[in-house]
Image (cartoon, rainbow, N blue to C red; front, side):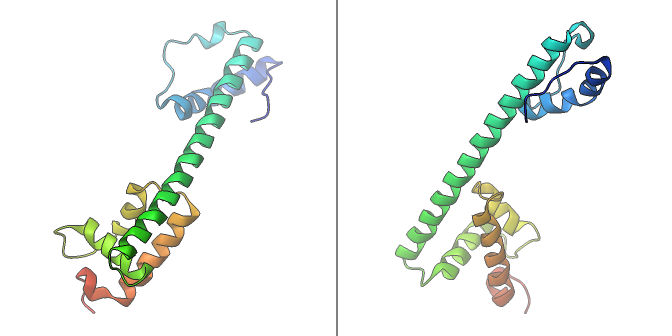
Length: 148
């Protein structure tokens, strides 16, 4: 967010309508104990800009974590191939089947859960893996307990 500035009472009132959402985005819970009416324009401006900087930093951290998770995931797929999977498709199938455990049938959320639990669901890698897994399941339904 560009540096935010409050110069009028109307801008302050508008800010008070969404500051709770921004605070929750940063801290995970709504603000409590603040007397917003006691904040001057400058104090509220500084508070919002600080929250915004924190939100930007958190988004960047999450982006880096997702990239790291995608890199780790691709290494893990290669490890499964090195352990005997014929190709990437087989490695992904084995990994998904391993996640399924004793469940004999692939459910609606298994593919999304697969990428989410590996921290890649918000990445391009994750979206591509979900497409690959859906294709694998559709082409090999009996591997996942789905009647052909």
